[in-house]
Image (cartoon, rainbow, N blue to C red; front, side, top):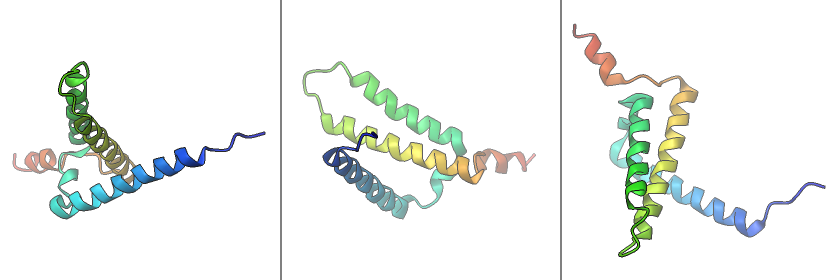
Length: 104
């Protein structure tokens, strides 16, 4: 017999997915397609920057700001999905580097 997913857990998961979608839509209105400019490596750098922020603050117990951790995790999740979009579309190249190569 297959286990059934816990409804409360799945509802919480869906709530976070909806929050991520709202964040992406809000930021897309501000930044448009600029996230594609540096390609996959640019998104890896953004993910790494967010991870570093979490890692460097993980042992701080005084003045712990769980909201900062949550925001960084949310940003990382959105960047990961955006990276998957680039992979799926085949648009993984750095557009700026490619443009500069044509100036030689």
